[in-house]
Figure 1 (cartoon, rainbow, N blue to C red):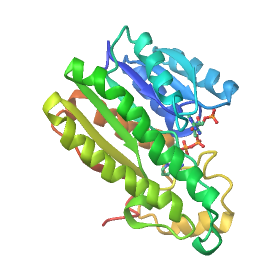
Figure 2: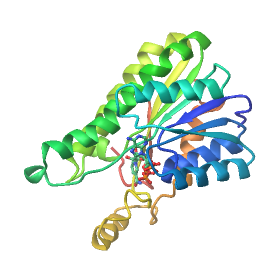
Figure 3: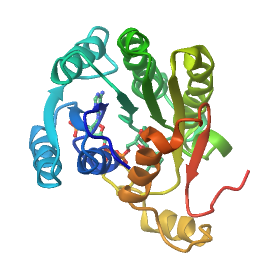
Length: 249
Ligand code: NAP
């Protein structure tokens, strides 16, 4: 796999899965625009790790759920790529878990705003440059919650299922321009997002994983690296589940 000369924008790449993806794509030779929201120290560390892996990176601070900010983030990534943007990974995401009976409209909106609306805003902003290039690779980070649902995550599951429908539509609309759009659907991966879950919940989850271990951020980054590579040039509109066999539907 060789991504030499390509420029990638990864949203939410300061920590977790986004950071591992930045390091992985950087190691393959891509120039990485690392978007993050507010944790500058974590983003600096991500940039350092990309550079250590032999890649080049810039930091682009911005809340991709906010009107106008997504466009600014894309503009900065394009400038870093000398006017090109070859790869977009829509990874930024949050959870606000609650049982449906107790879920507030604020919890619903916060999750839908970033996970789904943010993905829409950033993807729309990269369309023109990718269409002009007549090439592009888009990978959206969904979740198995968006495939099979998950108690306590009505908002998150709806957003992630929405991302899957969105991805399939982008794939259809953009295929004639040689732009592919795919999703990855991770299972349970220890990160700052999942660490607050009670140990009992983690133990129960582990028992449901046929491969008998949690995923790693690198497991997900590997799948994303494949989908943005030339090896995946005939794959579009797909959902690649990375969950140790938890979900087989
Ligand atoms: P994480 O460790 O909590 O990292 C989240 C990253 O997103 C951070 O870099 C954060 O920036 C950034 N971010 C948050 N809000 C943002 C915003 N409004 N605009 C731009 N960036 C923002 O999360 P993760 O576990 O790596 O999750 C990454 C993706 O994988 C998410 O879409 C998540 O839903 C999905 N996923 C995760 C799992 C899992 O088990 N971990 C499973 C399935 C799917 P700051 O550092 O500046 O705060």
